[in-house]
Structures are given as structure tokens and as C-alpha cells.
Amino acid sequence: MQPLLLLFLSPVVVLSSSAWTARGEDEAVAVASPEVNPLYYNCSLSGGRYGQNTTYEDNLKALAARLVGVARVSNFASHTVGSAPDAAYGIALCRGDYTGDECANGLRKAFENAVENRLFCDRFRDATIYYDQYMLRFSGEDFRANLTNAPAWVAWNMNNVTGAGGAAKFGGRVMELINKTADYAAWHSSLQRGYC
Ligand SMILES: *[C@@H]1O[C@H](CO)[C@@H](O)[C@H](O)[C@H]1NC(C)=O
Ligand SMILES: *[C@@H]1O[C@H](CO)[C@@H](O)[C@H](O)[C@H]1NC(C)=O
Ligand SMILES: *[C@@H]1O[C@H](CO)[C@@H](O)[C@H](O)[C@H]1NC(C)=O
Ligand SMILES: *[C@@H]1O[C@H](CO)[C@@H](O)[C@H](O)[C@H]1NC(C)=O
Ligand SMILES: *[C@@H]1O[C@H](CO)[C@@H](O)[C@H](O)[C@H]1NC(C)=O
Picture 1 (cartoon, rainbow, N blue to C red):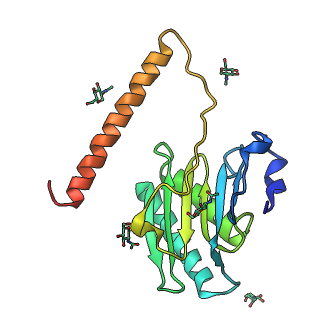
Picture 2: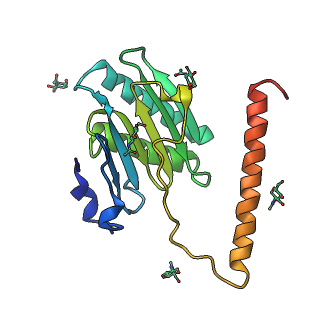
Picture 3: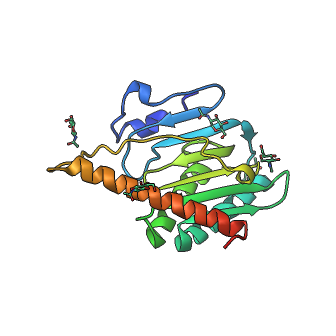
């Protein structure tokens, strides 16, 4: 299925015909785009679809508002609204340099486009949507209980490293970032287990 892809084609440059894919039952589409359009989204058919004016739809809208509110403060939010079988589970994350109102307004628009304007993942209960500046997922199943990177997607930064020694300098910064991230993850995990 290739839902409403044309909506995204007109104002943007498509990476290549192989840049978007549809595998199995899921719809997965990647487009190169400016800020307002998703870079990639996965509408997972396994979660099924929800009807108009259903409890799930209400819960999803409340979830979106809650995630936006929390992400404005902390750049990341994880929340549940309602109870099974109508519960809506979700997470939202903004890029580190995209904070406060920018983060909140971007996420709000992203949820609006998915849930109210139904520009993509039309009434899918389980949708993952990646923008450059933020990403979100919601589902009727609590995927957060065993959070993984799936459905993952990798994007290239199209800028080149330049200047004398630029590549080595950049590589050093990458290593530094990875080291700090690993240290932080270990620290955070030991905190959770009560070792600190
Ligand atoms: C879409 O997301 C679902 C749920 O995480 C996953 O099972 C599926 O493999 C993903 N599809 C693609 C094409 O990545
Ligand atoms: C959903 O609610 C709206 C607003 O009350 C109404 O116009 C619409 O007909 C309803 N749709 C269904 C399928 O019940
Ligand atoms: C998470 O995964 C672990 C290991 O696969 C499993 O034992 C556990 O039951 C899962 N938890 C939930 C809530 O699905
Ligand atoms: C980056 O370098 C490649 C290879 O030299 C070149 O083709 C490309 O146009 C460069 N990109 C930018 C944004 O300058
Ligand atoms: C990253 O950590 C490794 C292992 O401790 C160390 O060898 C390396 O020098 C570190 N690199 C940077 C840039 O901090």
C-alpha cells in the first residue's frame, strides 16, 4: 500500500524510488522533506485500525496532548491514557537542540497531521512517525514494556565534514559522544537498579 504519498511528493525532493519501501503488511514510507513533513513513517497493520468517535480515538487525542505537554518540559515523554482494550500508549522525543515551545509545537502539529488531519497512518492504532526534529509512536499495545529500536530507520546527514583534519576531528567528537552516551546509559541503568 502506498497511502497518500503524492501529498508529500509535490513540495519535496524524493530521495529515489528505492528510498521508500513497503514490506509485509506494514506501510513504511520514507521521503526527503522539509521540516513539516515526516522523513519516515510506519503504520503497522498488525495493530488494526480504530473507528471514528471511538474511545480509542478519544484516548489517543488525550494522549497526544499529554505527550506534547511533557515533552515541552523534558524533550521526552511516555504516557498511557485509558485502559485496555481502548488504552492508548505513546512516546514522543524531540531532538536535543529542539526544546520548549519548538518541541511542543512541532509535536502537536505532528499528532494533528496523523490523528486529526489523517494525512498518514489514517486511523492506524499503531503508528511510528519520524521527523528530523522529533519522533513519536502510539499504539493500542504497550510497546513501552519492552522498548526496542524497532521500527528503526536510519537517515544520512547530507552535509560533508570539511577543512584540514576535519574528518579526524569529527571522528573524535563522535567517539566522545558515544563514550558519554555509554557512561550515561550505564549510570542511568544502575540508578534504576538502585546501585547508586
Ligand atoms: C512497522 O512497525 C511494526 C511495529 O513495530 C513492526 O513490527 C514492523 O516490522 C515495522 N515495519 C517495517 C516495514 O519496518
Ligand atoms: C462522529 O461525531 C461527529 C461529531 O459529533 C459526527 O458528525 C459524525 O457523524 C460521527 N461519526 C460517526 C461514524 O459516528
Ligand atoms: C519483555 O520481554 C521479556 C524477555 O523477552 C519477557 O520475559 C517479558 O515477559 C516481556 N514483558 C512484557 C510486558 O511483554
Ligand atoms: C559532499 O561530498 C560529496 C563527494 O565529494 C559531493 O558529491 C557532495 O555534493 C557533497 N555535499 C555537499 C552538501 O556539499
Ligand atoms: C572512549 O572510550 C574508550 C574506552 O574507554 C577510550 O579508549 C577512548 O580514548 C575514549 N575516546 C574518547 C574520545 O573519549
